[in-house]
Length: 216
Ligand SMILES: [Zn+2]
View (spheres, rainbow, N blue to C red):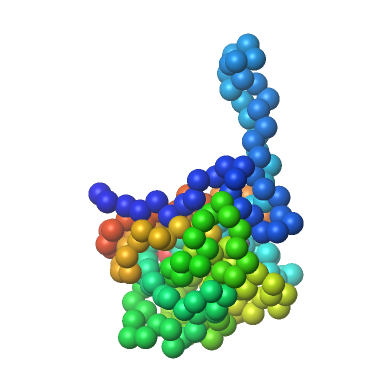
């Protein structure tokens, strides 16, 4: 079965938000040091590459990532490619004639092209678009940039909109190679207790291959 891996490689070079903690792997035991196995630990922001935000990341009363149901992260998914220029929010009018036909929608903007090189002028979502998606019954939205709000946003209008509608968020996806269309998303967050996010291994299978409500 053909699938797209939409997860960037996790390495020391992976770009993280300015001021956030980049990935590092600390080797405790190693064969070349004469140890009997390789054993390591990691230090990193949880907003690392492809990741799911938890509601407590953007709202004081939001739940941690372990309390998210799994169903939004697994099932039929629509990929929409837009071309709106750097630093813009995707608005409803940018959808053009595209109809929302799935409960999960991922947006390719091409505005954060290299996961290893931070650029501040990436595209994001507008709260108006979130409102429209909520009306269509969407329960997960994703984007190929580090945030669904602009880099310097303090009000986080789109994060507040997804909180109001209890819509799940995926950020940091790699969608360059993925044409617009219908896929099956698999991108499960880890149940990290109380955590504000979790990295995910996100893939898109071609077409609709799962019953839409595996986990009601
Ligand atoms: Zn995040």
